[in-house]
Amino acid sequence: MDDSRIVDLYLQRDESALSHTADKYGSRLRTLSYRIVADYPTAEECENDTYIQAWNSIPPHEPRNYLYAFLARIIRHISLNFCRHRDRLKRSAHIVELSAEMEACIPAPNDYECSVDDIVLKDAINSFLSRLDAEKRNIFIRRYWYLDSIEEICKRFALSESKVKVLLFRCRNKLRQQLIKEGYTL
Image (cartoon, rainbow, N blue to C red; front, side, top):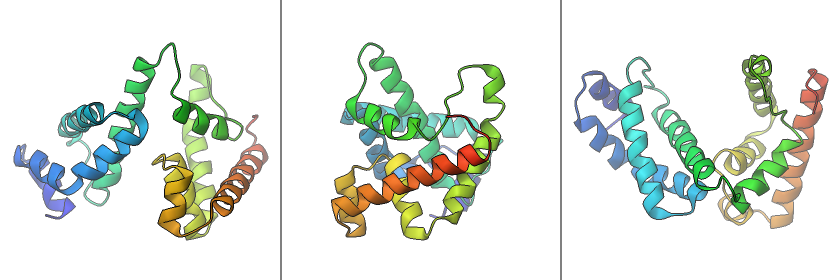
């Protein structure tokens, strides 16, 4: 079933929308969650919470052309929130590794005034990503949005580990330079 029809079912408040969503995207959503929480039962719980949040978010949102991205954003936030809750005293090494790679590039606002700049920051990052060629953009997104390991990226794109690491390093540096040029202090 196509995404537009599934969204129509949500809008009609037809509960079959949930089963169609699970059939079409369930395994991809669980995989994304598992990369973050590293526990299958928790990933399944996050998947179920995603369906509930999607049910409550559609309407007003109507993600006809981007249903998977809409669901991926929801499950990613739910999974990260679970990790924050679970790991208050100890940090997940995988999340810390990715955070350390990106913290030199993206400023982390700690107060409300800084959060006003979030929209501008989002636009700057999207602008940066749009200027990358397709392969670099996809590798960058697979690493920092989908949390793929270097090994998984190497297999997916048939590249060597050193090439992927160098490519990600250069992309982070370019992003940092663009953000500094646009006035962000890092």
